[in-house]
Image (cartoon, rainbow, N blue to C red):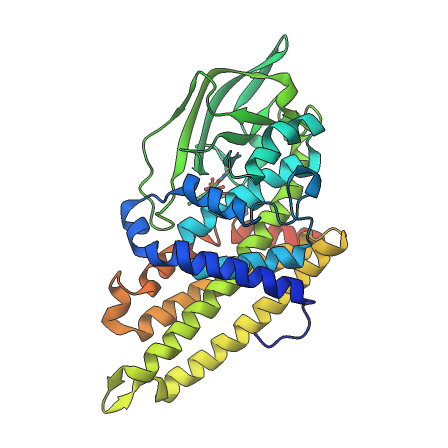
Length: 383
Ligand SMILES: Cc1cc2nc3c(=O)[nH]c(=O)nc-3n(C[C@H](O)[C@H](O)[C@H](O)COP(=O)(O)OP(=O)(O)OC[C@H]3O[C@@H](n4cnc5c(N)ncnc54)[C@H](O)[C@@H]3O)c2cc1C
């Protein structure tokens, strides 16, 4: 990476080394097996990551976090992508970037003590439950209900595609507590040992196969009202704010993944021969890679611009949406061409590009589709 714009420091470089050493030692060697098995030893690995201080990089030291900035977090994400396994990387990000930040941002001290601190110590694993079988993009229309009965919520409904949902200890759950539409949505910390909670049939996914993204059922689940996050019926705004971190991480994953795929392909092209020449010398491929390297650099700058925006405390919605839209869509083209460049070997699971091609397909869907990103960008551009 040759850019001088991102303000990465010596401290970030040290963090990068810690993350890379951990990743290359404990995650990368198992990338094929975990994908084939459809699971990974999340609990064991979260513990190891916690020992290295990697589960609360941006969080307050009071709760066990490292108290670092968004640039440190970006460095963490970029190095973790060396795991070369989209399922494992997603499982970790669901914990560090999608579920726990909500507690850090809007939880009470008691909630942070009970849920955030153990999550940073790797003792409790988190998930985020928004999507339902009948509702995805249209979040304001979600149907899972939480009725107040004394000092408990009674929760009924279903959620789907919930990553980590099969083994998480808690789910940041979006529920309907009020009127129809966005003004009746709340967030609740849902302990998964609550009676009435069950995990449905394992979903057979195209990619990110090392981790479950589960169908979950809630039948008369009683959860203490003290588990309400933020204000009653005020959850929609927090969901939208939380999406910014999730989407930014998706953009960082996309750009780092593309860099890895391009490096691998260029390396492969030095040794694989056809018609007496290394295939990398054919001009059609040199030009294609030149175009992709240029586009990835542009995606990276767009993404770093969004990191800068979120770090500055300004509303990052427009920049984050652009970064996710651009990098997630570009990732499809880069993975396609890198696979094509491998010829038949690209179709064989032994090569990382086969799994990468399947895994990147999630990027323009998860955390808000590319079509929804365009809607947001249009709205924020006064269109
Ligand atoms: C592997 C995986 C993991 C996931 N993990 C989680 C998780 O951990 N937690 C969680 O809550 N969710 C999770 N999701 C859900 C994900 O966020 C949703 O799939 C996504 O938001 C899209 O919702 P949907 O699938 O219901 O599609 P729909 O909303 O039904 O959309 C279908 C199509 O219609 C388009 N569309 C919808 N509205 C519009 C519009 N206004 N204008 C133009 N086009 C539109 C969409 O772009 C899409 O192409 C996961 C999904 C997958 C596949």
